[in-house]
Picture: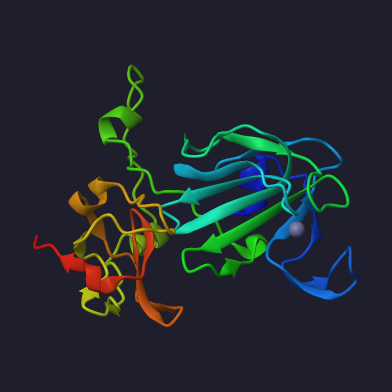
Length: 251
Ligand SMILES: [Zn+2]
């Protein structure tokens, strides 16, 4: 999912400046742009929180960033930076949920027009390209079958026609499942537990909830190298790189 769609909760934004090296609009010199700029047609659009998170900073920066908001998203392991805001609508330390209005797009600080500067920063301080960040919302538990059924409606009559040859072929012997790739010490489908809790995502902020240690998670993909580390994807909480901090749960 496009990050900008989630932040603005609309799709008619316009990308006005890319992430990475660019000519600085003020000095004309090459400069590293640690975010993506989005034009909002000159209007003060609300910018929204992606999901459960904590406001790390909010207010007037007094510098190039203008009025700004920084939000930590524990599940994603990143913080999002919103610069040049018109109005700021949250306070430092505030918990946010999907859709919380953080502030409105403006042109405060070092800005040449109404736009949103969106930055995505990892815990190690490095920046990701917001425009290429593929946001995956949290997986929700499927509804129990009983509540999915609509009450009071008659059941569909059973099909009495004999199955066609093609249908028979479709319901024949299922194809053997592809072998599961190994995930280092874990395999896909393994239940694992996070051994330690209280891991700081960002300096000074310990915001992994204690409940994480109590939960079991399911290994959902083969290991991937990320930043020189071996990472696995855990179904409920996304990518996890500290594999030494995981233990397999029997059963
Ligand atoms: Zn920018």
